Length: 118
Image 1 (cartoon, rainbow, N blue to C red):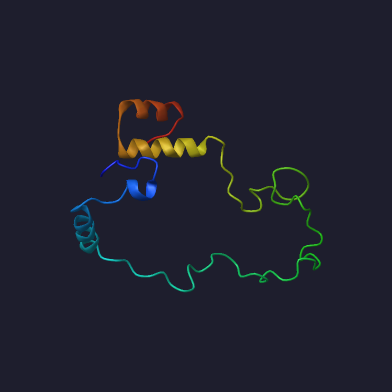
Image 2 (spheres, rainbow, N blue to C red):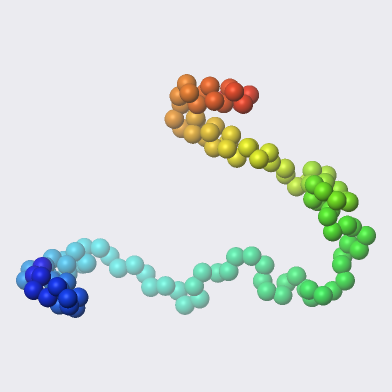
C-alpha cells in the first residue's frame, strides 16, 4: 500500500490496484453467517420477581442466619449438605488431570507425596 499520506489514516490504508478484487474474492469464499435473532440470548437464572416480595417474613423464623456456615450457631456446611473442599483440593485435582493427559514420573511423585493414586 502506498505510504504517500503518513498522517492521513483515511488515505494511508486504502487498497491498491488488485487488492480490492482479492479482498472481494476472499469475502465470497467464506459464507456469511446467520443474522442475530431479534430477542438475543435467553436470560439464564430465575425470572425477575419469581422469589416473591423481598420484605416478606422469613420462611424459617427459628433458623439462625449463620445456618450452613462453618461458624456461629446453626448447622455446619457438612450438616446442611453443602460440599466442603479443602483449600488445596482444586490444585490436587488439576495436577491429577494433567498427570492423566501427560503422564510423567515427576507428576506421579508429586501426587504420591500428597497420598493420591492415579
